[in-house]
Image 1 (cartoon, protein in one colour):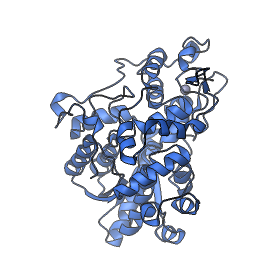
Image 2 (cartoon, protein in one colour):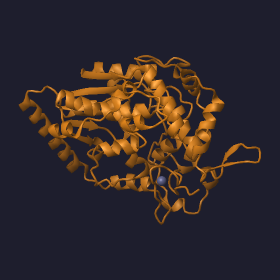
Image 3 (spheres, rainbow, N blue to C red):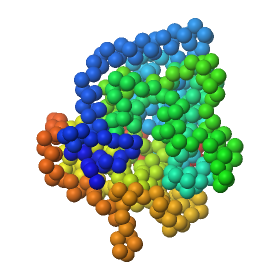
Image 4 (cartoon, protein in one colour):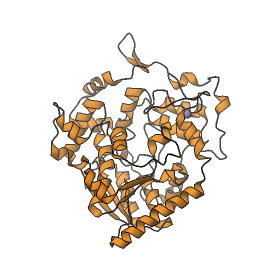
Length: 421
Ligand SMILES: [Zn+2]
């Protein structure tokens, strides 16, 4: 397997990572190119877009200037602060509830609504539907969180139409950041196609209903139908990403909202050193991510460690150490899922078997799967020193909610609980 000489990404990282002559991946080069951007000019562009939206909404007599999709995580908390406090708009917060919430995520969402004093509309999927969809999509594409992503990417657009608010403000354009799929000058915006390809494994709910083996009903899939072209055109909906307009730095932003708004981080993670990301659902850092490892041989720690290396907060050697420590760990929330859908682990692993990428996985003579070529074998590659990102002063790989700002200390064992509402 080819691995980036600067970070820890493998050549099979989806979607479509590429390496240059120096062996540096497109994700690393994208982060590097962001240092050259004139962010003051970008912020002026952002202010113009926001002003225009506000003026138009006021003219219509609509009290909502824009929509912000929120989960209560670090990004949506920062987005809301930025849009409401810094730029002075009145956002309508919208949130899709996938029903596998962590108690910590619910506390952060509640804290966000209270501290920022915002209106929130929340759509909750029927819990039985959520389980049926998760089980079916696991068998179909090895994904237990299809409905999370489909809901998160569909409900805000439906709310935009319902409340007559054309501007939707997203946070980071995540895919391009990690693997460098888009250029920083592309000003990528949200589209139905992008949503379907990146977040919904290529399947609209209509497509699933047509599958001969699909046990799901229209009621199960009701939250995920995208509005009609006519409805979209009538409102002229636009979804922008803040990371195209501000020098997005998740770590700094998280430190800011911990201090300013009392945002709460996890105290402990099973599958990564990062305790501030993906806090709101039980599977994001657990089973969903473990599935990525089972299929492609790398998981969230690779993503998190690559980000740390690119920002000069972690040396590549330490990043490799982290990947070796965490990426293969079986998440205990797997038991939550197995119990919820009534499946045994053997059955689960058999479903995944044909989805393992042969570029990275092989079976030994005892029939056990093993990773053919881990990043650990690429610790001392010859090109590494030539492309190294210097460590910043006071580089710390992770942060934790200080005792004084944590409103509720996270309970021991809480990471294996979930709440529906
Ligand atoms: Zn890289």
